[in-house]
Image (cartoon, rainbow, N blue to C red; front, side):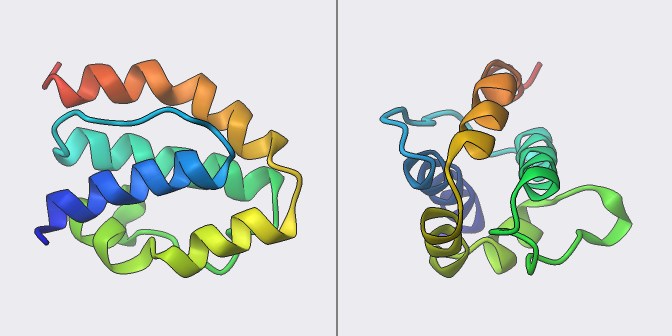
Length: 105
């Protein structure tokens, strides 16, 4: 599995972990990684479930950072620790930005 595939899997797992039946099928590029990193950060601001995910070096998430740090165990924490209201809110707020970034815009 390539790092880009891992990013897509992480995004889709994040959606699933939040209890949403939506899917990301776009291109996993650096801008998508950056926006997904913002989504993780926003979710960390309103739930303890992702607190142990390290901050990306340089402040912006990269494809490599997501592939390395955003694992199934992170998603299990999200599902088990909190009401998923926080993650759902973040996803709906960023979903369109993620789709546009996947188009290379």
